[in-house]
Image (cartoon, rainbow, N blue to C red; front, top):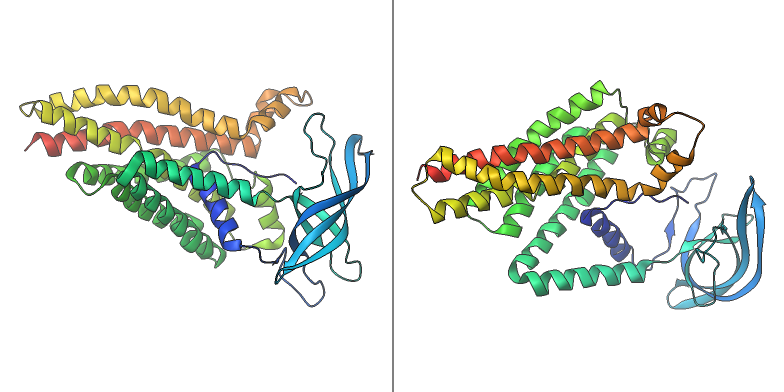
Length: 372
């Protein structure tokens, strides 16, 4: 099973929210139909390893195990079942199941009704990490840390409660993502930094920069002839899970929501810098205030653009290595593939949004503050 990871805190929060609200209930893998009953998933613990061997599938070594799993079947009831497990036998990864491992087991529909271990249950460590993150944010950030967590909660609520359901219901992914991005930007900035003149400047600058980024993203996607079908998830949608969704709009919406994340820092930091410069020397004219603020912003841009690239590169590192060792096609062909091109466009649009955020925020802050 291949999982798509993102480096952003919001992505982790979305996952934790799913785990928390999912609880310990049994869930189905697909919508039930009269012809095909749904698979059922259970949390369980490995209590015995019956068999273990390494086979070969399509020329690659595969670990194969038969284990006994104690399942939580609801109402405090436990049930022990025999289950199979298979994984790529990568050296040194310790993928073999051991007694005491928390796992996720699936029960196939009748008439077979066999059990298979599909993955480890990582709910507890993920929730522990989330709690540690929340505790540190409040402990070190105090009131600002608490309000920033509230902003994060609103971000998750907007995405889970509005953006995703609206897209599933058939709304335009681009339009819905823009509305969601605007709501997230306003709520998160005000909650994290409080209501003040410079925060309002930061919000206004963010909205202007976000609008420009949306036009830029649309132009870049059109120019590069991207259709939003470069990922495995998009393929699943095309194959029937959500046929009516506009994949190009979904790609644009993702780029815009990502731009909100990178824009949260630059406008607030720039507005604060210009405000402090103005307080230190209220006699500075607008032009001088602007250029001094730009000097601070230039240093900020240098580090953040590199950080943004490393975030995307780190999330896709195994894929980059795969393309590097694959000698079957030249580099220019690899770079032109839809998946890689999407990541390049996503990174460049986010970086341009960062760069545009500095002069826009600095100019607005210098004009508003310098004329008082």
